Length: 329
Ligand code: PBG
Image (cartoon, rainbow, N blue to C red; front, side):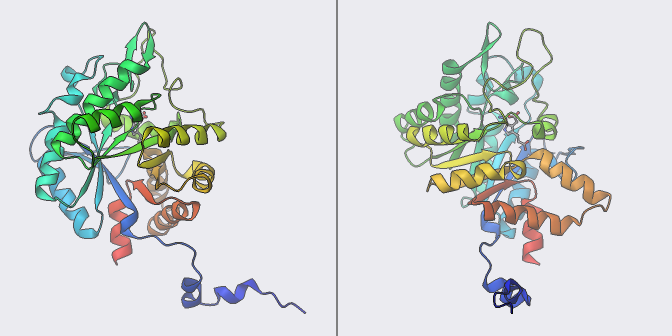
């Protein structure tokens, strides 16, 4: 006779919800946002249906909507005009640059919104790389100095947490020291600790026109700084170094194909873990849903919940607004 019957705990929704091991709420979401110059402007991103680049005024309006839906954190990316790009990335720390103006505008309108600017040179680089290039190579330490200046200028504009996504060695320490020296002791660092060289970033790069340029003189991909997708022990090494250097939150990226990494890091550390449900993951679900091959709402909620089950504390996701609307129903 069978005594152990696992189906007893699945008999109805009330029982199932009692034994549930994790939950998904709007508190878990960080919405990535693309910003461009201009006024009252909005441009769709073709490979990311439902996602737009917006001028600052419409970005603030969008942030108000997000906040009222319960999404209380945004991650900012700038579409930089070609004439402002160079090899130093110096536009990245322009006090009146697009990023700095956006941070100020959001914090003025919504002081409680957690504003997390992306810290990386690629949108500002003529080469589309996250670092400064010398003799055909991405130079680590000079890039770190640029990232530190960029981070301090974000803090001056009112950023709550800076989010370096570049994968240079030692940059968390250099950024932390620069923030401390400038008096920004309360500004946090969310470090992209384990970020892989991934083809899932394609739609993002077309949104910002930030893909590495096709030029014989420079590396054609980001594999000398972003991680090799064959590796997982290396992720722990990256995570421990960033914690030692002063990171407050640890990011793993991409998301869905990398849940083994999230779970492994969760076992190893007690700091908050963020995971990035990247542009290509968004595009896949949207493409299938538009064809009615997948149920849009159910697939979104399942995917995002799986991040929580794997051990993430927060999810950077282009689905944040839509998922909040579904959860609030
Ligand atoms: C660049 C950056 C990338 C993403 C966030 N910051 C792309 C890259 O590394 O080339 C990707 C995000 C996404 O695909 O949604 N510093």
